[in-house]
Length: 353
Ligand SMILES: Cc1ncc(COP(=O)(O)O)c(C=O)c1O
Image (cartoon, rainbow, N blue to C red; front, side, top):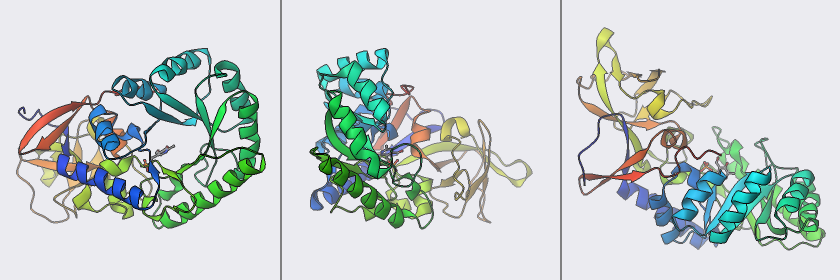
């Protein structure tokens, strides 16, 4: 246990974190869906261990760097969930990783599959074909998944199955529709692989907003990430209630000049994400009507919606709009337990490649 650092700093409510991890694990077990949480949210071996200890089959990562850090901390089943363009350097890193962990990468084109095969086969890295279910970021058309999988198999790679990220679930009233799109796209892709004579061991989907609507009749593995902490986006989308939010940025009221309430938590602590539907730059956990209406690098101006101003020098808990972006800016998470604080390093901080 240690004394609290100078604000602003990220604070984790361990009871809430554990509850979020446990509830997702219970939901997955009840629905017979394997859970492979996305570790880009926390970049933390301690939280990875909580997830794996509650039954997660492995972890999803966004970068080889995250995979390397987590493998070093004993995580032995990792999925790099995007169509990685494999060059010589990436192939070396993947080979090293595969000595310590089961590793899979995404692929969404015939060229990408052939190239990965040239540099990696015959070799223990598996591939999962990514399909676009409506986010329009990466992923081939679901009916093209068979051709991509066949290219990977011909190039000597083992094909694990298909995956999608229904990122368009990040829209007001869009959560259930995105989950339905996800199931449709994954079902089409799975059938395309089967028609081409390939085995489909995994049908992987999931995002935090669409999680409650996931179609367990189609999806065999889910990869939510944000669910461990929650954030103002999940609160505003109605995906997570404020009582479940486990990550806040502890900030000090530094000024009342001009009748404003100004905090010392700017974009360098909270992150600068602001989705089109967001009502501000972040929320205050104990002042649900308040909104951050102005954000600069080191300051946040709060509109308290008529509530009395918290005194200068007092501290408040700010809920960042996007927890992954806030964590990516921090060296450590200050974990609150039994009234004291402990520091968990954000071990994969900065490992964005
Ligand atoms: C490929 C992929 N899978 C899973 C997730 C996790 O979803 P969420 O951040 O909504 O929890 C993401 C998030 O960006 C993602 O890009």
